[in-house]
Image (cartoon, rainbow, N blue to C red):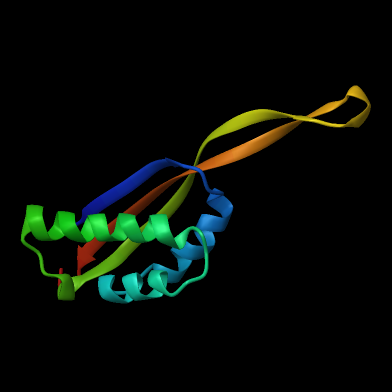
Length: 112
């Protein structure tokens, strides 16, 4: 049975977040948490929260055990972009783009 959790509108780059999501795909839920706790990337903290939320959803809503869960899908999609003005010299200005990401983690049972 698939269990989902997501976090939306996070102020992090989706391109950099995909580097971290690729590390936990196919791993057990416990191993994914261990990887994210020891990874020196800024994306690992919010992604760890999403994985823990999916584990909590599985245990509380579907009575699944942590030992049987693995990461079936981990996705980092692009959210909206915040555009800000960046003032430059000689009266010029540029557009500064702050990207957002939507993270989604899907857990599944090993035996099913």
